[in-house]
Length: 383
Image 1 (cartoon, one colour):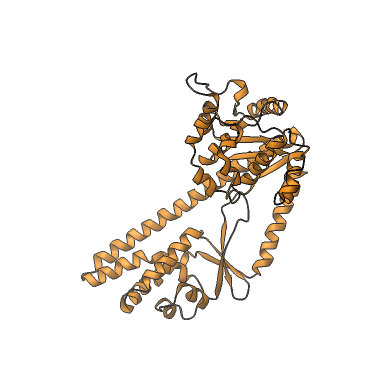
Image 2: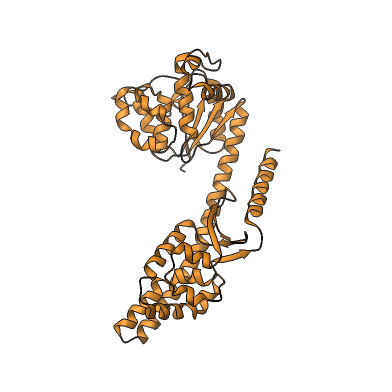
């Protein structure tokens, strides 16, 4: 049976005890640890051991990184050719570390290879190093100060900059940028158990949501095909065929707009307003995407003029498609647009499926409730 392969990346000499304890812990969860000091990596006699470590990373499912007081060995120059450093720089707003590629350690290169392949990284840093990192950040703009500081947590003074800039790179990535301090091994274990459990829970939830959306899409597609067949069978002239095609193409757009309350809906749908101006006519002043629960996908909200809001079933990508559709819809001549609108508004199924639901509550108040609930759940999880 295939097992989840967990690559453990760290220096070995200062973190040997941590590594030796992590190995049975990972096994106890039913996963396969991959560690350089336990012969889990194929060391091809035709290449350097550094090359073997780097090549093993893409074969793993996730990486656990432990940052301690040591920098470790510098990677051999030949393996640098196997990295897309320009891409790696673009994924972090603090990529100063990558300006000195020849100074990167083998541990750092392992993590960069994981980042390059979008492999999840769970990063932990010794709390003493974490504290000294804050001191470094406060003073690194003052060369005369930073060069004189001896950081107690770092074994060799000349490596401090590269360890701290590595932390900067990780914490300022555009995603997967969490890095947590630890003082005891149990803190790492507890965090990994919690994170992996929540990740599995989220994947199950997303799978359920995809199944629901897939069924809804199939039903919607079937209704569209039925409508298309009926309309096409009853239309004799080319002009009317174009109208029918338009009804099918813009059904998503018109279903969304017709779900928003407006006494002059047909007048608005036949207008030449810009997308922003059109939404204002419906009383909508903004669109916000909020991740209300880390196990669920982000929710989309349409903010009204009075501060209340609509919950929207669509995600942001669909809203962008609808906006694009509006831009092409207003290019159609008025008579055709009216015909398309009439067909869509008379369809009972489109009226039953409403992609938005109004919530008579101030949006900022609602957000505060979400954050308080998240904090409560987080606090309860720590007890």
